[in-house]
Image (cartoon, rainbow over the protein chains, first blue to last red):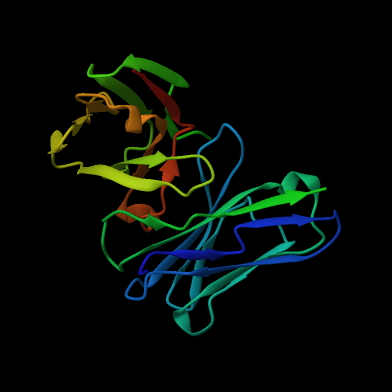
Length: 114
Length: 113
């Protein structure tokens, strides 16, 4: 399977706990994006990487959120001290550099904070 | 601010008929537009796209039309099939924003047999 892979698919956590999600992009894609989708809304941009460099962070990404992409391969998104408002689908996507071609999305990680 | 808007949250269409989904945008810097299809509990799947230098792009049953002066695009699905029942998202991007996508809220399409 050469698509975008995300793990875990589902995560239920208690408020205040830390969670970490992983995204493995398509291997030849050097741009990687994180989005968040809540019920009834379209995905909203969170942050993106070109290789290992994090080039932009949305205002939606509070200080409790951190993302990394060591060595420009897989990426992790960590949420510290989770709140109920963090419950959402977290989506990862990848594209080729300098291309306006479509972004390929993973199946997402559904986070539920109880 | 919502830069991409899909004003119809739902659409119901008879199998075999045409489905028309509409999308409006406000950012003049957008130069690439995409439609994604999403089934429940899955990530969005790319459907079709169009560059701002074109006004029409066709791929099988799917055609996207772009009206730059009106900042409006539409997706036509002909003929509609039961498997087309899904949520459809309009998205836009551009060189000016490093190709990150701005999405509309989606339109849920139901194709009736």
